[in-house]
Length: 123
Image 1 (cartoon, rainbow, N blue to C red):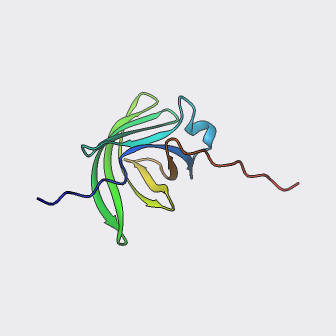
Image 2: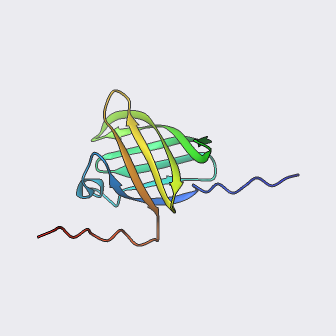
């Protein structure tokens, strides 16, 4: 019997940036994260949004990917949507979509890796 490949997405990832929201919002209640378990399930939390995910491994442009649907809440209001992610340069890059609402790209680093350094502005 052949062993299946390990799932490269499994584990907790710290959200380090989102296209639509500043990092202060992402980390409002706790450090923003997205997490995938070994049973094709997962969860995420950023700002006041929390979701439970039903995940499926796939490919995007020939690259291993994970896609999911999610159900959760946004400031205690029911919310649902979908999302996807790939690993690029050791980081998780993807999109999260709200059904009938916003969407945002995001970047996450595997939990335990140092956060990105703040960019210095020009004076």
